[in-house]
Amino acid sequence: MAADLPNGGSSTEKYSRQTLFAPLGERGQRRLMSSRAVIVGCGALGSFHASALARAGVGELILIDRDYVEESNLQRQWLYDESDAREGLPKAIAAERKLRAVNSEISVTGIVTDVDATNVERLIKDADVILDGSDNFAVRYLVNEAAVKNSIPWIYGAAVGSYGVTATILPGRTPCLACLLPDVPGGAQPTCDTAGILNVAASAVASFQVANALKILSGQSEAVEPRLLTLDVWQGSPRSIGVGDPDPECRVCAHHEFNLLDAAGTRPGTILCGRNAIQVSGDSPIDIEILATRLGTLGEVRANEYALRFVTPPYEMTIFVDGRAIIKGTDDPAKARSLYSRFLGR
Image (tube, rainbow, N blue to C red; front, side, top):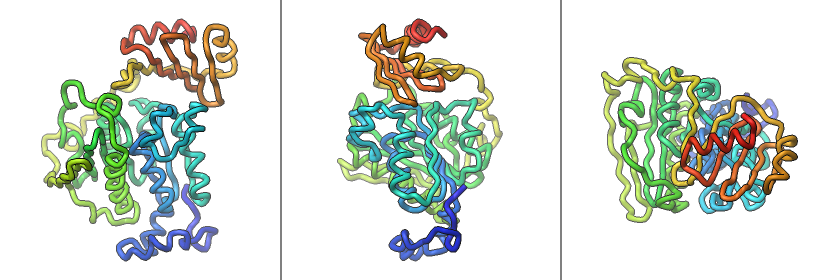
């Protein structure tokens, strides 16, 4: 599971500057080295989480992301470079490769998939903490249910423009996300693609998330304060708001109603906010090599062992080995499904 402890092939010497920090120390470092963190989303927040936790010596990292590296990601997504974008590598795979070179003593597993009700509990199984690097509330509310149901701490985070917010959810001790935000925020919400983002806003939020993850993983969750932190790196106005006790009427953490988890089996097309793109879920794996040959006569094709990118103007399809596809050039789910069926025969 995790890296070997000292006297078993690994040494805390690599982390000597970290263990000099008295609240962590050697004991806390050993706890980190035998812990497991799951990162949901490897974008601006998640790529920072992954790098920081790997360098801190967290023994096992599970990196989950559905998307691929694009050139526009490089401004804020810390683990990737231009070669990853040229290859169109899935972010989870690119991150895994980078982190294996950063710290060979830890276990890193990249998983290319969409987190949904059919797989979320399996993906977070045995996690000591979950970090939110996702870009939408649907995934966050789903993770919240899975974390509460399985009593796993998780750390919510979001950033857009120069603004960011984070809160740590400790099931049984703090309010869960459904307590703090009973309903998904209404109306169109700003995204990185519509409002832009400063890379330092993302790194600031991610730093606070990682700090609390280190407290939890080192066995010091009592040091985590039940607060909602907001900050604006441009306006310079951080605020920390106490969140009180869990809501005794919360449907999730009080009444244990897991409506989203119970919806397993429903997998509609997902609109990727601000990107003029739809994600279509697949029901079975595909053979990338065979598909590349078939589509090569119909448009521009680039493929690697993880995914295939097919361009047939005005559309661009990125098709993953699990059968899932991201279709750019439309925000109409029906049109996206039609294109999926047309070119994949499904």
